[in-house]
Image (cartoon, rainbow, N blue to C red):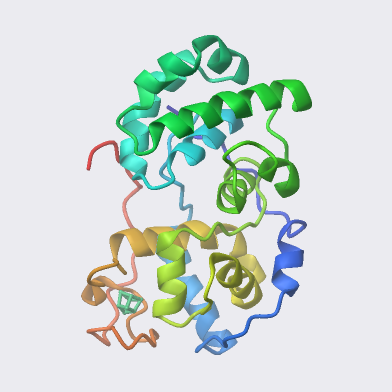
Length: 256
Ligand code: SF4
């Protein structure tokens, strides 16, 4: 399945309010160091992509809503056959909650998630002509859609420079003291403040992929890290950065 193509970066319209929020803790990095961190991420992955499969904004919204407490690979395994039969709110309603549950029963909390997907499909049809709305406020008014889900949809479907703070981003921001914060909202505001504007659009995916594949939760793989010399984490185990080369194209995981 093809991902929705991201339009070119615009755009801070939705990012601005959060960016103005003051962060309580300071970043451990000078602006030139942050610039260098993101320059290296941009060399490694010039066009980073999210790993949730989708074919349009609606299926992206559903996939993100299903991904809470679940791996992207697990969600992709369930949504491939689901989206083949239900890629619009109308088709999702026609499928019905019971059959939807059968498609997603391998995903944690599937009963609640099925309820929410049906309810959000109804609301999209009733209030938005079956289209996914383009503002954070409207998205967050949909059943089961929180700030993180709304930010992913804004970034991936509508090309807005939003940062959805998931477990990886929250960990990295605090672990390496790039944008420390006690809550996802604090980290989001802090990241929006410290990341140079030209890197903001892709920052969300660079940080997630760095956290998923290198700066892992249990044991960061510092010997494979391109920012090991810059990193100020007390947990780091290596000062020598890995060679800075462009990585092979991402493969969307469906196992594991
Ligand atoms: S050096 Fe280690 S702790 Fe620092 S960002 Fe890289 S992987 Fe994470």
